[in-house]
Image (cartoon, rainbow, N blue to C red; front, side, top):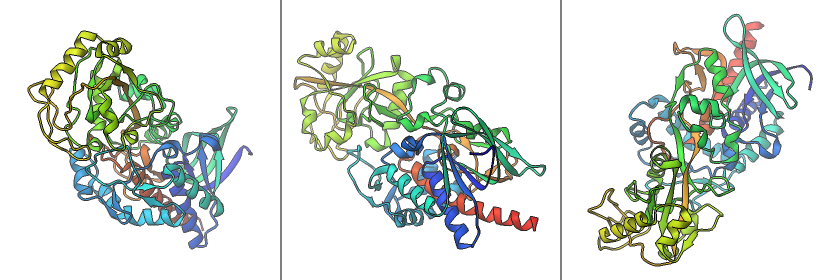
Length: 473
């Protein structure tokens, strides 16, 4: 690698958004008979590339490959308390199907595979092979079209010309050497800042360093791309003080070791008391809120799922326990409390009170059954069954950070906007590092929007470079 390398388009990040941007740009350049130099710069090495996408199952909020789930736009707006960018959301809705067909044409298969949600309010389409299949197939096609992928390269600064257009960037390569690249356009697709403790503390708040990324890819997402854009006067978007939370087993070494079986159990805190209605709606619509409660309201940011042998009667229960760690078991609740280091008398009283509050009715594991526990605080709205069949079972649960919500504002072409809502010439962004989400996360939209707007950014960047070259001629 020399000290000066020129690229027409440099993409920062090799996740869903970055690989989609690179491939879309390469395809459009070929269609237009443009000989463009396109590169992906990836902080990780080859074996760990792909950011969050590499490790996720990549759920898609789609009824089928061509059709977004019902009420797609309305749900996203309502979940965000109408702070979400309606034009962006409508563009996502319109382009979701065609983009997935494009991804499918590159060798990625989609199907309705088992998920960790035993109950769900919306359909989830999945790529066979998860997010890694997306990364592998799109990057392979991009390389075949001449896209260069430079690993262990971290972008840290953007350079503008006298007109305010992007003309270069500084990167650090393995060993710490800094290199200045001259470029015509940059597409930022480097994820959020969940791997940066300083930014987590700055935006999320106290004890944010205790929220681990849900997967290895999150540790590579350190927020430099967001800061680079902000330093140029880019506009922020999304809810900066929040993150997409997921309940996981802290003992697990797996990526995304979700504990999603608790709607059929109870959750208690370190004091041995329930703190939430575990069954107020389907798991896909409530796990984020419950995981957030665990972090913000529970002592030491930990809770425990308490259940009994009836857990094993729930069909597909293993899908809702993505941890490889064994259950903590005991023949009595007192013994279980000792193993969990929580007050035994309180746990016994909590379970006894809960069992007395359970109402008669048919237990239906796969949909809201209205089988309640009433007369207690908090009540339980669905799936209330007594915990009385020893040995008793527990799993510890903490909140993990899937991605951060604060990011950069773009238009529907992926162009980064200034605080005056003007596009910064030559600067694009897509994926998690662009701010969209406020309030409740609409599940199955993160990877989807990365693909949609990564593709759009890549295509528009080619047009931008072409127009720039014409102005020089």
